[in-house]
Length: 267
Image (tube, rainbow, N blue to C red; front, side, top):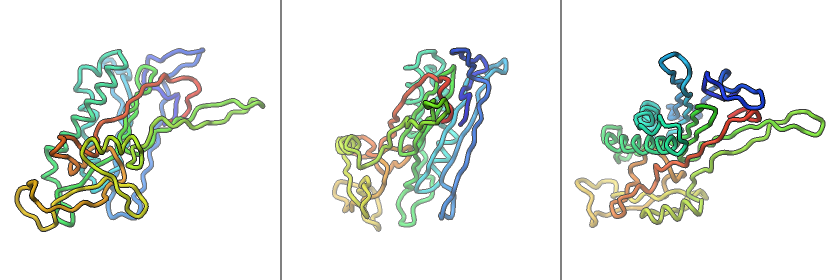
């Protein structure tokens, strides 16, 4: 995204600079070597009744295990955020809580319908999930929320000694990876574990043996495999732990809000 980086027609004024009138967004996607695209993007501007811009929503969803989760999140996350009365507040904490609730509501929506999605090649229920990174530009502020490892990076204008300009990157998000000590501690509390596969840390999936039929009980034979290389996502409901009643791959987002200033150039 390139500014003026602002989503409001009633612009914020700072040091004579106007924010809110020139928001340009560029999207690019690469399917890579897969036979189908698992990633999705959602860009939408919401307007007031008088036509002025209320906010702009930008979301990136890096799917895995199929396109079903990323497509579901693309279709439902913003609506679920907006359903909360907190989102209409002028208080930053209320808005961030509305974003958080939107993430969790969307995740549990996936849980309700995942049985309808195609099974894996091995016959297991769908393992579809997606990273989620969103930015909401509203009233001169940038609200962010994310799960997974799709980074949000700001480029800020910096002036050198010779008065020339440079753009300095500032990373706004921390990747939720299984090798993180904080994520490993959370995973253990949730009833899970992390193991290496080909040198990459992955969340372990403990699942019934391939040809098991019928309900899964404590006595059901299982196998544990290093499976997913992100520690948080929406979807991945295979990671639900009956003992702790928690998702080992967490849907809980990290949230932040920042003032948009004249030094902010790209996001």
